[in-house]
Length: 168
Image (tube, rainbow, N blue to C red; front, side, top):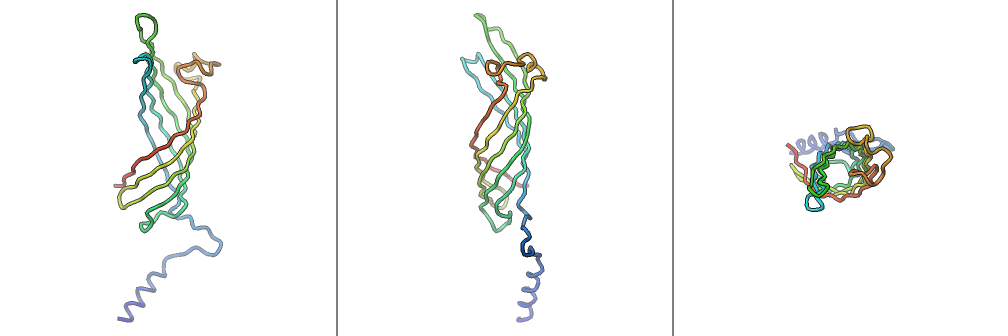
């Protein structure tokens, strides 16, 4: 009995621990890919915008991700692109005009995660900068137009998010 306990103790010690002064980074990095589908209407459907932003972000976790740890805090930074489809109804007869725009995205944020065996509940705050591509599709018609275009030349946004992640 005593031998078996001693053998188990020695097996546990075989895990490598960081040397003095060496940072412990295993399990602290992540990668997020996100695709969103957004739609908004104003003026009784006179202006409709559908946006499809796609982003990829690197994540850094404050604590190593381990099965024994259920709570973690993270920071993230990433880039992306988004397509915007605009439908305008103008004039007395409501003739539609459709335009397409491309926006480039840079984002950064911080959040918290409550992790379980096969899913996590996450909440974060992000700040994003968006720039309309002036050379793509209808963006070329709005060169030099900052605010009166259907999609502004530059946008700064702050978002709060609550979502779930699943592991298969």
